[in-house]
Length: 296
Image (tube, rainbow, N blue to C red):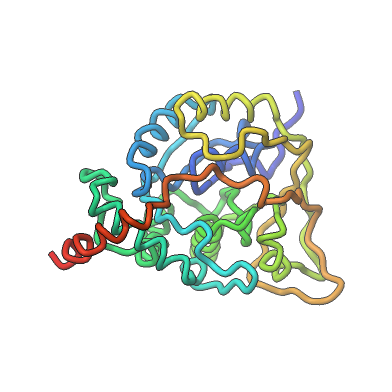
């Protein structure tokens, strides 16, 4: 039996949403010591949180924990052609305002769970900002200097604002605690402008591993069975993945490089649409009530 690679000793995957642990860390998800998922509930889909909880409890993995942080609903809110990073993640643009109108309308129409913490009066951008502290506070006690931690890359794989936030939270904790932070190699045309900033003239060595397609399908089937699979149904697993120690800050420049990328077309393989849209008539009829509700 081959020896366990050193970089999987005392190892942990930290993924944003349920299924991220196997989409971007396919080669190691069955080998790490622990998997941590950050988000569970989502205000736009009240039934999603309980379904995710049931699915995570049924995953064929050795140790899975969820931080139960509320998902803010930021996907697609940043300007990915000219991305602006912040201490807590990314700067959100006009789409965040439209998303907030949807949240208020759904809340006024009773289409979010009244028992869920995601019905707080915080707007989408504020929840996103506050989540950075929540995530850091929840993860810090779980991390030690001798750990190998695997998480989203700085550009969020296909360009997801939550993924970028998770990376930036762990990069912050790495400076404080001193663990080794690893990332994998997925990228799309959407996230490429941000990925280009992290190229190096002397990148660290990378590790290439074959993916475990059978385990990935088994995990995907659990999410499908619990009706909380949010990725495309016709996704084709890559044959291998590359892992590299996450760069410390941006660099960029001519003739720079990082590692081989698993590059795919993100616009043809998005997450399944969740109920973020509300008809104009319903929004108009609900906004007055929503605004009043925010005052109480």
